[in-house]
Length: 626
Image (tube, rainbow, N blue to C red):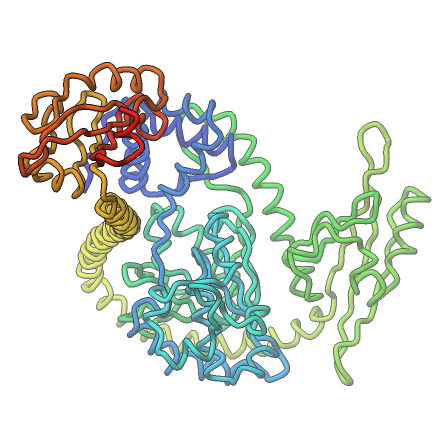
């Protein structure tokens, strides 16, 4: 556990987070301060900086430093079928039920939020392919993998993994879903097309909608309570009724039982309750509540209010820019006409809503030409042979303060249920009044019991929250340690490979030197012996271990070294070969010989010299020349 930051350090950290958010659009203000401060301090220590302001200066002058910082903060710890027991329960209990409740002609939509390098998304593809068969899986299943880390997403999109990364999978599964590609394994391309990766910030961006299964494991634990609640609001909005939410082993929904019921607490699998309308997502980013950002917060708050007002309007709203592109699709219009947030920015003419249930394009042209609102009541939309839906549609041109046309807004007010609901509500009211009278007496009895249990529940909730917070902190630390261990293992492997290469090179060089019949002596820049080959041992009778690291001119052997000083100095000074020099000497058996010595600089540098010593035979050309 890290120690709490002092007041000055905390202020410096908050200023740094605001700078990162404004400069690069990464909003870390919703992250838990303990783990966030620990990760940032780790990176600051690596670059030798102790003050947050100095580190901000470093970020301002080095764009590359942002990448290193994000890689440090975003802990990408993942693996195939991580926590095997949880995945087995998912495969055995959840997947069959999910497949059964989705009609055969509808798509099964799955989201892996915080997918890192993609192992989790591909694990989902394997699980559903095993349950449905590969061909059926390719027709019915679509998997979205998202993360904020672009480097991790590039690795995920490649679909390439090492043999070690695939160890959690059986040999049979590996052979079925992966094929060798060099020294790695590539996920099969046909099934890969059903897995879509993209950058997505779960604290800021609109969620993927109409999901049957949402997996977000060991990601929530990095955020504070407020951020976790906002993320869960988005997840609840994203899931269909009875859709499943799969969390990490350190994450629980202690205070959200009204919206999610427990499918399996041990494996952290929950189900969205039926009958509860999902909360709209909040598109505005999380805010940092400190004095330095009050002005920014005011602007953001107003923008958030405008966006939420449109998003939560009780009728469908479509806003079209002057060039015909869709600018706004609120929640009602998306759910009524099967649109998605991805349709924002597309030309209206490409969407079915432009001509069904009525021809919108001509109405838009009329409204903009006549500069007035066009209203069409009772527009029928056929939903089936015996079912229709009715709308009151209004097309209103939008103009700026200077009178320029900037677009139009189209409202779809659903009037189908007005009369039907009126009669149904009357019957329901009578039924509820009767049920209310029956429940009144029961409620009075329960109130007394509830009061007695309330104090016990509050104590238990407090204890649970404390335990949950501690558990999340421990799990966060564990993942940081695991990430560090993986980095050390990678470095160790690189060092082992480098050591093997050096051993091979040294063995090769020693073999070359040993195979030379002449004496070869290598001296360093201080004229100490670095190498003494077998030829030198046989010529002078001194072993290599006796002379290594000894000063060459201090050695006592059969070759007078004095005459070589000038030649060695010349080779060191000029960097060129000098000699040969013929020197009378006495070999290891006491016989007088003439030794010719050539001095060469080591590798063309002046940091060492190589001496080549050869005994001159009496009848050799060199001897006769002398």
